[in-house]
Figure 1 (cartoon, helix red, strand yellow):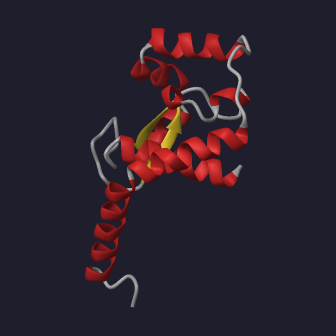
Figure 2 (cartoon, rainbow, N blue to C red):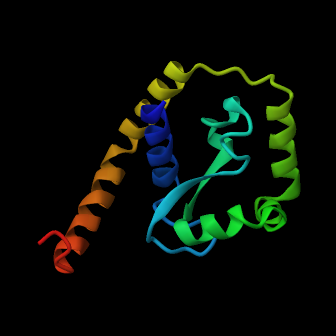
Length: 129
């Protein structure tokens, strides 16, 4: 499960261009689930159930459900919630992990470039010394 979670997170952050969908920062980008990942197992790895947010915006919206729903769009949020609550979405953890690893592999050059840029910034700030 951790492998699938890590692959999903990396994919969502790559897909989002390593930029927060709300404020546009490039710092501390995370994978934020639209419908909380613990609510429905089938929603944990859905492409349409996640977007990239910085840690600050992620924390902000986690504590403010109605603002989160408005940001996502009530039709999108409620439609996804309804789909997942009906249990019609089938999933297989192994298949999801494999699928996301393939997606990450496609986005690997972008992910590698981002990690190298972060390492250069850390070295410039002498964080690794």
